[in-house]
Length: 614
Picture 1: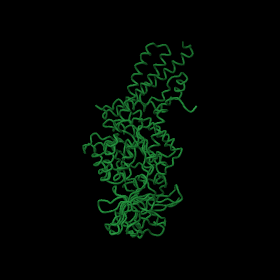
Picture 2 (picture 1 turned 90 degrees about the vertical axis):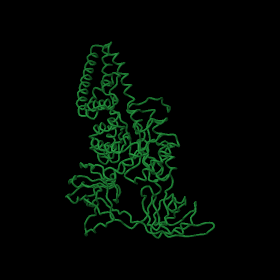
Picture 3 (picture 1 turned 30 degrees about the horizontal axis):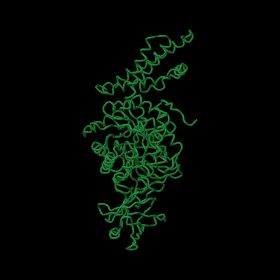
Picture 4 (picture 1 turned 90 degrees about the horizontal axis):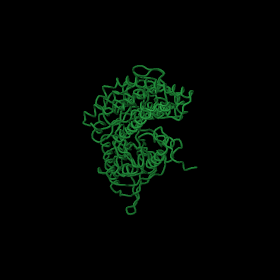
């Protein structure tokens, strides 16, 4: 029996909940009216209604109501993302039951059945986009494929066998032939393993990166293997063409050598040499290539220049040597320190052209590969290079150039290089539609991909444009993954979701690298949580991306912080790992962590499995 004073408090609390429910209903109706045209005839309409309700609900500060509900042992509405109005109504009915309203018991039964039905929608949408849940875990694993995956079926097979559920192809690197080869490797490996593995192709997106810098003398520098499982592949080339310093369209770097010496090499031969830094190194001969080259591997970092002498020792034919020929010119770099000034110019040098020499005292120049950025920046704005390795501030700007003062660097001296990312967190810079690179990637995606990644999604019009392009190519069933990596993307996320999910399988990638640079690292942890909540309310799957187990994948040794990050990632429908030499160890660790954590946590809800440690 409820005592009089307690009855009055319950009635006041019930009235507060009723007022909250009424306001949520009104706000939901207003927001849905703005989306109505997109939702006509769409099966996404019910989820959009829940999203609209959630957005209104979260405009209220209900901490006082939550405290009062918790004291009563009732739900504090902290986990209502998947069923906002039903959740509020359930708690209100429970209060009415405490006040003696017999009819509220029937309402509670009906509402509980409705909540159970709503709970499976997100899981179904995740399956439609990302493929079926693996048998052993709920959270899927996505892996970014390295360039060598186009020519190394062994690597891709191991990735699929170990548990890769989605293979990501980065359309900002390599090229159409390489992308097709990677996709075919994934399909083949999935058939062999009997596992599902979807293919995601990311569009290159806006060219917010440094344009080519003046070239320098060519050489081949490779760090300790980063793009293969234990070794780096390259090709000794006797065609007479200059060597290459970087993989091109999925083809390994090439070193020019004498063709007669090359002809005498056999599988398994060891080739020794002192590299340009005086370090003893060796190659192992693996196979011959269709064009007459010889594929070799190295398990150490190397630096090779024209004139490096390669030695081959054979038990029958004795010793023989060859001298490395010239390389194609290497991309230039610019060294910068705090206090330096850099010119950001409208256009870099034309392809193959030399940059005009600087007058004494002139600062070095860089250009952004995308036109129009000078029109969007102002004095005092920040321009950030390479995910925060270099932070600059605009000191002066006109139609032709901006002067950028370096205000911080990660190391005492940093080097600016071609293709390093540029972020303009204070500037409203948008992409300029789909360029030639995006069109090429879309052509391939329509052929071979299950999902297209929309880089720098900033508004519903970006999604509309992508879907129009896909439909023009006959790709009516290809899913869309909107990558949220800017402040504009955050602000327009509800509209982005409705534009995509109303028309085809759709998901959101929290691209935490660029996002942290754009909004500030101190806000990233809070924002990634809010994005997760919003997507759960929208009933669309989330990919947790960028620097997951980064140290482990790159060096073989994890940090404690990144293991905690991986545990938090379990709440997403998919977690993305980047490429690296220890990717298999990274996958094993990630799968172990998320499999353990799913017994303890489901989205925001703790799962109280029995503890075994005490």
